[in-house]
Length: 429
RNA sequence: GGAGCAGUACUCAAGAGGCCGAAGAGGCGCCCCUGCUAAGGGUGUAGACUGGGAAACUGGUGCGAGAGUUCGAAUCUCUCCUGCUCCGCCA
Image (cartoon, rainbow, N blue to C red; front, side, top):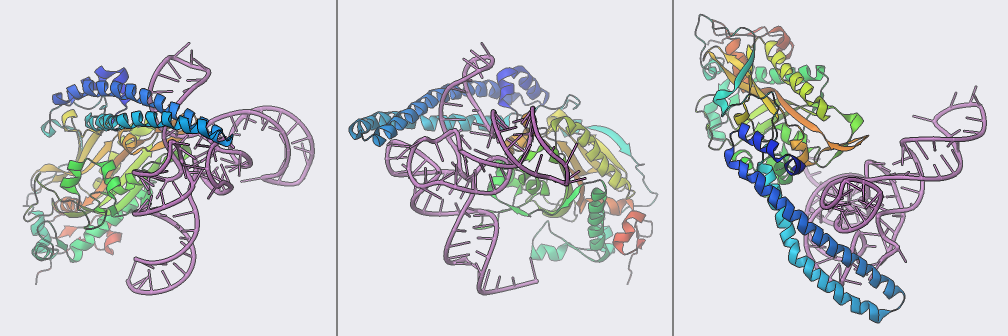
């Protein structure tokens, strides 16, 4: 959500930005919202005048009453009643205009950073940098679900019976590996100076509405029956929601938090749920990082944040690359975003394991998250990034640490979290 | 889940239908006094969101949220949320 002043003062910039995102159908919204804004302000001024008059006369009535001039006071009531009627007749219009403006403003995309490559859709995203050699061993890497099953580490069949498609039981060393990776990710971020946080896994509808549109909510969020509660799709929801409507002391910035949570997603439509694997599931777990900072520090943080994820995966011997979202693929709230993708030696391509975004002040404007500065209050910048989402991270790990004999090598950094285990061996009966 | 109490600006806090955008204090600015240490006194200032205006300034909204009563609500009524205390239940 951009500042409406930008439309008042620099409409062309807003339109140019929309063109860069190939959302030509939204160009007319800019003119429309400009018109609505003028109508709204005109009406507001008129209504405010009436309100002012009402307040003044009501006050006079008060004085008259106190002085005991009852008659005079009573006669003034009529006048106020008339004004009140007038206000009432237009109040709905005022609210409606306000809502219309807000609805349109929600649709107008955030101004993207100059550095964002121009492109229509995800096919035009740009690889920025590779980290580590995308290695293809001279032996076959099995499908990740097969690797897990060979290690007696996965039971999707039972999960299907208890919970349906898109759920899973992780078992034994594979389950332990999953937890170990998350614990390691947590400590990794703590060592980077982030504060560890376990947020609520359910949030109220007003918080949900603050962080996503109704359509998005419907496609993603599980609702608890008979409660005003939703299961979070990512801890970003509860982490950013935490600051909704808050005025933060400037000296508390930057706020850098790393949160753990399970994540629940309906995954309606889109790509659907995979039959066999763990790539797209209804339930996963994630170590996340979020930052709230001064606007001028946002780009520094952005670069730091994605590089932490790269460093994390590299420490587990997983080759990764960063892929920058082009203008057309960038969500409307975002200023700049990149995916961190892990190498799949089986498919011999990279696949998404995380996503780093700076939203500028758009999210803060929507949720009213401000800082109290010396020169006045301002909206903070918000950023978020995945440290590790797993089982997806687990897939990357298994494929890249798979050895010819079917065993899984555990890198040094992870061994303490695996009780010193150096390799997960195939247990053949 | 039940009972009682509460929610006022960055913080604490007064206010109990009109004179309340809301005393007072902390805070912040300036000045003074004092020297044995995070002290005292004076004085000024601000306070959230938003409309108009080049500005000076001037309107509106806003006292947990929403609705209502009233000419007029921080103040009265209803619903909800949150916190505290007690009871119940339970990892």
